[in-house]
Image 1 (cartoon, one colour):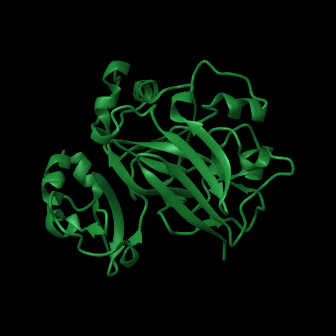
Image 2 (cartoon, one colour):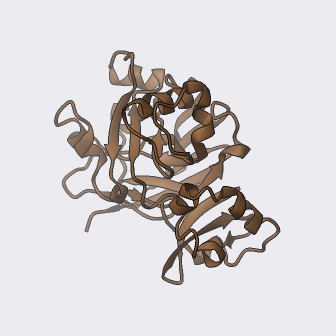
Image 3 (cartoon, one colour):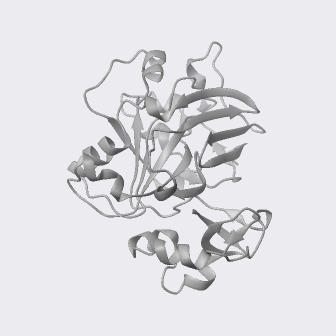
Length: 283
């Protein structure tokens, strides 16, 4: 099942992505689960699946505005330097533990929404990533049990304002300008992707391939990341873990390649779909 958040007729809702459009489950289940995050927190995935089974789309994809898959997560935790080729291109050394940083919810935009290049920078870079959405709360989760806490997977573009990211050795400023990260187009539930190492990630800028990698090349696996992160903070339904980007980022190309107004960036992961965002300058 593919679950998504969207705006329809000016009203936020959530539902299932079908072949020909959107099944608005917020219309039927919204009283109990007002958002996709609330659905996950309430353990309602099976109920949503039953409601969507055999239902016809209420509207076409062109008639809704996609929102970030989880518009209101409690936590967005991002992993840096989690592919060998990305470590090599940055000149960094391997780490015994994951490099982690946070994003804020207002940094995210949905599929089709514009990612915003800040007016204080001309170094807006792409980072295609696999996102993990937590479905079951937990603390000190054993690695062997970690996948049981996953609700599903989505595409993520951890857009990076490189000059601000590199002001100091802390990544936070360059990762938290509003509207700089893409998240979507939907979440594919974990029952359809039992093995998160079995996918291929591709990033394209204006149709040109910039990144390609198998998710089996993650240094720190999805189960390990959930185990490690849950050791220092409790994970809640709707929390997002973006697992890191492979090599091919723009700022390490010669000459560097950055995103500019009028560009289109795509992150495609087979078994999930394609997240597409136009780029616009901050007003």
